Image 1 (spheres, one colour):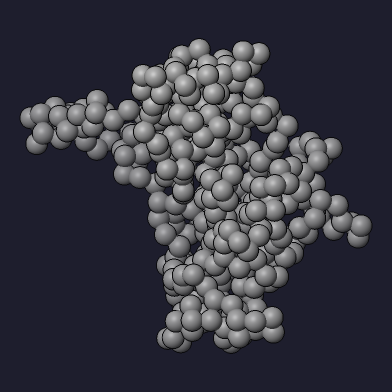
Image 2 (cartoon, helix red, strand yellow):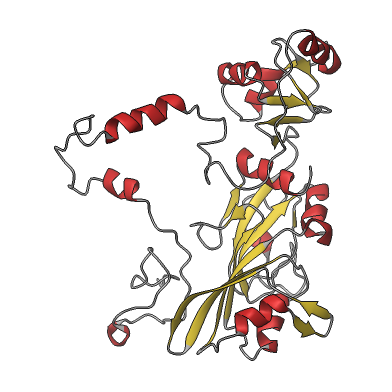
Length: 351
């Protein structure tokens, strides 16, 4: 069975095979993989470093490592898929104390509601005990007010809760997914012509979802799926200028000045369009790989801009939308977003 990514392409960076005549696979594919960290390589048992001293005698590194572990307290989202910093958060306020804390308690407390730590634990933030610690440390906001008093009850259906400045989605009816769209799939939930569509890749084909924006049939990569209409509208609205990152393959060589020209603006039939960033990732005889970031949501904007400068796109992959990254997700798969990713996505559009 043919594999979409040739083995001759290394995961450390995007480059071509060093021996193309003997390689049976085509060399027009793009590799979207991240360099594994050195710590993860050593942890796999490479055999190096056995028997080395890891305490203070080894240059003091062991002492510094233990000090970092003791001095830093992990937040509730730090073990999520993409680490801690994915994007904007709400600015943290000073926790109330004394009489002010009691006043906040009475403002947000709902006697008929559910305990705050239970609501957070049910939403997947952390265990109930850890959630109690988060509340006591002043890291939880309810309706814009920092709560530090224990025993607060809230209504999960009406309360707006933030932890460490990130929104916690409490509505269990809302769904958020990342879909790695293959080439040839139509960006629609149902196609009357019988072409491959998004629904063909969903496990629950009766779940009512819609796609955030579109990718044309020949474009691959990240496509967000949700039933949260407000979030979908904001992500696609020009007001919020949500950035999108693409990996573009064009015929080479690429003359100098193309990047500056695209950053300055390209005159198209529907106005001037420009990219936010332009970076050449790899260049070999015959083609060039370019990484571009732009916030415009116009139809086929990347293809039209490269055609306007005389380099029509051969292959196009969306790598990222806002804070959500494609990463190493396999093509044709759908994965649910974590609470961490959802929180950052909501924060990016002011929710």
